[in-house]
Amino acid sequence: MEAQEVAARKRELKLPKLEMGDGVLHDQEKYYSPEIMEREWETLWTRVWIIAGRVSDLRKVGDWFRFEFGRESLIIVRSAEDRIQAFYNVCQHRGSQIVDRDFGHGNAFVCPFHSWAWNIDGSLKRITDAETFPEKTICDNPGLTEVRCETWGGFVFVNMDENAAPLREFLGGLADALDVYRMEEMIVAKDYSVDWPMNWKISLDAFMEGYHAHARHPELVRMIDDFNFEYDIFGNGHSKMVIPMWTKSPRIAERTGLTEELRFSIESAGLDPKNFEDRQADVRPAVIEARRKWAERFGIDISDMTDTQVADDGNYNAFPNITFNAHPEGVLVMRFLPHATDPARCRYDVWVLSVRSSDPEFALPFYMAVPPETDLSGKGERPARQYVEHGDEGLGVVLNQDGDSLPMVQAGVQSRGFKGIRLSNQEIRLRYFYEEYARYLGGVK
Image (tube, rainbow, N blue to C red; front, side, top):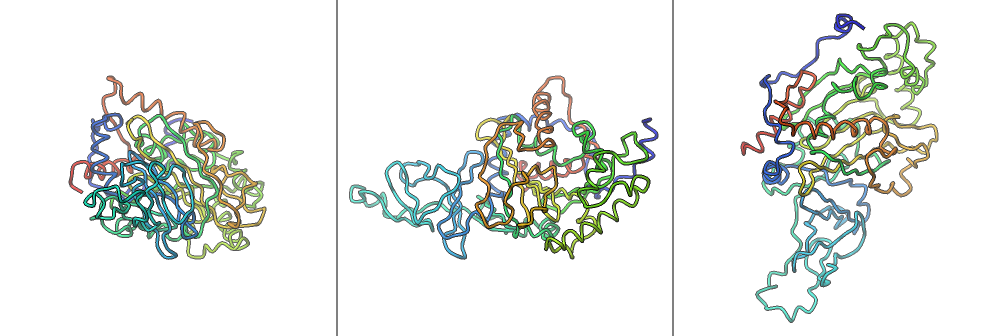
């Protein structure tokens, strides 16, 4: 297709009003510098709200899970029917970590080294052979060190800064926008964790823009409009983009007729694609109507959702390191965590949340790659966390395509030949993110 033909089929981008520079960014060392990694830890990670896990993994008093990120390890526990607490996973005797599993249950935490024990509310339960310690050494009855902990949307957040604003205040308009999806009622349908060979920001960057879709995801642009996104910001670094679905990219050559991928999408909505071969403009309203009827059939209340929320992919970023791809029936949640010591590595966590359904005909969006045999009733055990290598088919084609390209970015930004980062308006969320990032690293926040 000629460039002028493509341009004619693109609309003016809907961009938020931001007072940001438009020059080349010469700060690529943020992707590989050990010094910047250390500054991030002290000025960012220890001062912001971070998702540690799901409330649904703490159903009973005594249930706990471990959350490890960077150099820290935390224990999140339901210490009472109406209370969830977080503690550093460290013994107050000689510093051994206490738990070494992802999930567990009990009425105490016992250090495996010398058997000191704490109650699940963090208070000291036992010092083995306490009579052999000088009184001044243990007179404070050393409890576990607590970390701030709050919940929203069915997620447990932690913050190592005692003076940080409350969670809901920090999330602000982002939480207001996402509340309609009622993630607190959803269950975990998939839980994957991957060690990725790139800085956490390089991996996150890819999921805050759709500019790469035509190059990395050729099948997607045949069923989404990868150019005419809508963008918005919420304050505190949070942002979103809306990915139009049930259409095709203005970049592709087929100006009339449906692509095979679009036929597949239309069929997945319970419609016959043959009825839309010459009526592509009618696809979207028909899909919206069909999806509302579909939701009613499965008992999913979407009466307060807009047509855009019903039909399209809402991609939200919770600063600094979470993305939500939100749909009425489920949400793809991705978490990007720094490596403990290597700025060129990160941990990439993928959760899929689903509404509860026992109907065998209920299905989540295909790109979430949830096996059809997965129990989505919410009555059984949640799927086990799987630690996998990049390329595992459980991640799905789209995420593996991203994983293929990002190590090349990590290598390239460290080249002497790379002269700086140049961002288009399609990457405006990256500009907004890095302005907020700079405020933390610069001590403004």
